[in-house]
Image 1 (cartoon, rainbow, N blue to C red):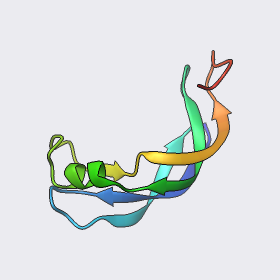
Image 2 (cartoon, helix red, strand yellow):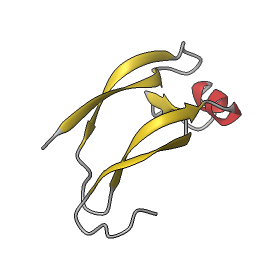
Image 3 (cartoon, one colour):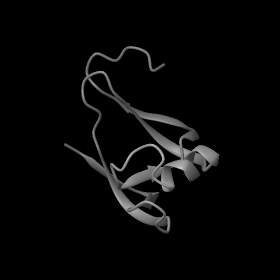
Image 4 (cartoon, rainbow, N blue to C red):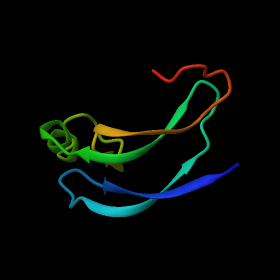
Length: 81
């Protein structure tokens, strides 16, 4: 299993300071696609997440409006959608 090291903006507690951290990303499992993110925005929804308005399952990796390149696919994936 290959693990790719990358960076992400992580918040660890409600209202906490977002910090750029190293993250590890596993190979895609069956039915999954791994995308190399080229750019990602942090928007108002992420502000609500940071404040704990969507639950308290911290830590959260912020940024969900992204563009990237399909890097690898898991078993059974014939066309990334």
